[in-house]
Image 1 (cartoon, rainbow, N blue to C red):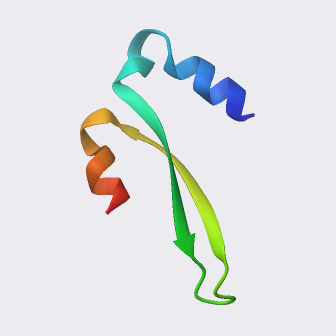
Image 2 (cartoon, rainbow, N blue to C red; image 1 turned 180 degrees about the vertical axis):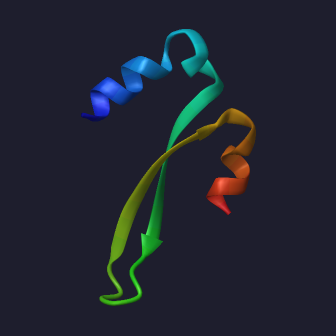
Length: 49
């Protein structure tokens, strides 16, 4: 499923978006989890904060 999302980002309008993976600490267990999102290129820095 991830390969399909990455493949669609390489063509046409998809070049305006990027896939971001952020590591976040879970409030319940204290373990780290990974959150993935597809965000516009100009909002990547804002998403990572």
